[in-house]
Length: 278
Length: 331
Image 1 (cartoon, helix red, strand yellow):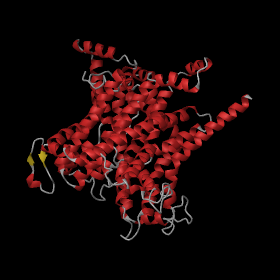
Image 2 (spheres, one colour; image 1 turned 30 degrees about the vertical axis):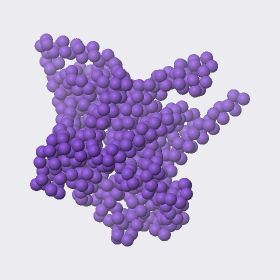
Image 3 (cartoon, rainbow over the protein chains, first blue to last red; image 1 turned 90 degrees about the vertical axis):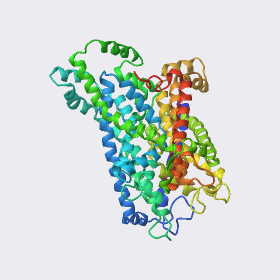
Image 4 (tube, rainbow over the protein chains, first blue to last red; image 1 turned 60 degrees about the vertical axis):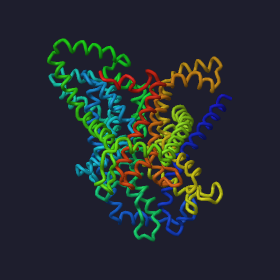
């Protein structure tokens, strides 16, 4: 009898699991499916392709438009992530370990920026970057990305830093290390997992951006993939770009899928730990 | 933009300061008192290091947001159309009068509000369900969590294209769900699809924030309630919800502000056609398509003010549980 109830409960949970998984995956599978369809079967309205082809992928990698955008996306996201994580780690270390006036102000400012409507910056940044010659360049996008990734980085890292055994730092200092050395030699290696998790979250944020990318770029020089997607027209103007758009969409979804598959635990803890252990 | 906030958002910062949880005010006072007496070399070095470490982050954040927003106010007071640069002049509040008496603005404002209210409400319910599943499921917890992270991580534009093609007549698997029409060419169905896309994308984030709150609910309390004969629903409303209240409010605040910025989905799904523009979409159109910096900036300022008001109302509702309610002020 007892066994029976647990089996039934398990079944019920299992059913709910299936609903969640299907709901989460269908749109992703659908765009992947479209990307493998041949032009002739693209509009058959079926969920799975009848004929499979890799032509869509071949065609996007043959165009400069997509390859340039991919390089821009990867380069900009990686640089912005690296800078945001370094700056965020410095600030988070100070916030979680040091006593100095102005600390709460910094925390308050990060919180305000997390809530800031990014579209409000679009007009002034457009004009300022035009005057400074930053418009349509990598730094022109990296700067706002760092800014809006910093609150995320600072919060996540502060939460991680609090779990580090700080006695080790004291020990290092007793052995004659300065505060700076204690940070670099002892704490930084211990903090590596937290830094890594934060880097993933920040990268996802930069990778995802559309608003800044579409307003602060105008050519292939700095245009990222999400924006290039919305400008795709196909190789000739008579060609339907659907297959190409879907293939490009799948390509930029791959890193996200890999992160999620391999680092699910880290991402979940990164997004919730700041929360619980506050 | 998303940030991991916590049921006790204020705590993160406070606890981050001294590791003393929410009683950070006490050390703060002590620090102030200490400031009057001469500081030891050690303390001075600590302060210098603290400032040094925070300076770059603070500088970037302030330079890229505070200066542009002030500049934006200045631009909004001018007639400034990049197509007619020599007609640039100071016009006071004329742009505000233009925007605030414009029906497109109010339509977009209504659309944005509608999307915000509906999606956040639906996400709260679905997110709570998903949080419960992710937190309590007996089987396949890893799989559910992994699957739920996919909408969170996926590029919004990619998801939007998926939804667009799903509803495109002839191509999509959903297109014929409600008869033969083209759902993305009619206003009501377009708005519904935009909201569906938003909800799909952001429910997992809501769920993760709520799950952080769920983790705070003591297992013993649930067991005790169960022993006392409380039904599952009673355990949920009488035990879980009260404990989770701060987490729920923070999740609501962040999702509301985020929902108000809706742009990507509308851009891809309808490009703002059939009166489905959000305020962000309208500001974008005035700036990039219309090259009208004056009007674009005016809209930017108005959106900023609206978001500030929403945040203020939430903070008032929260009382002290609000993130930043005591962080925001200068010390």
